Length: 157
Image 1: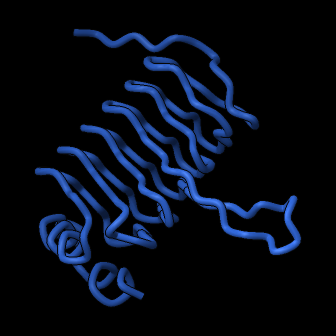
Image 2: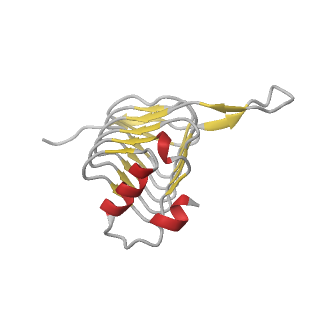
């Protein structure tokens, strides 16, 4: 509801407005962050974005537990970052929530899914449509279901 009322109607370039709205609801948003109008953020008070992080339209951050996005992190369209599940081994099916951390300079590809408790290493690239079920190493390219390392990532200076 929060996103529908204050963020989605805002014009695409109004990143400052959306950052302000999220801050008013308790999010910690760094300078230069770009949160696009179609992004869905369930619990802004459990969101922390370092400077210049980007969350695309259509990305969904389901965050009963904290989500921390590092500096210059990109979460692409349709990505689903989910910090909660249910304990199916108990009759009451209780909610289980675990934080997710995405390191600086990482990229979560379109329609990728990141499950509770995962840590995406600094500089990692998660391929489109991948399902991340465990931590990924820094500076790696990971893809698949379940997501696995397919190569190392090198950057040019």
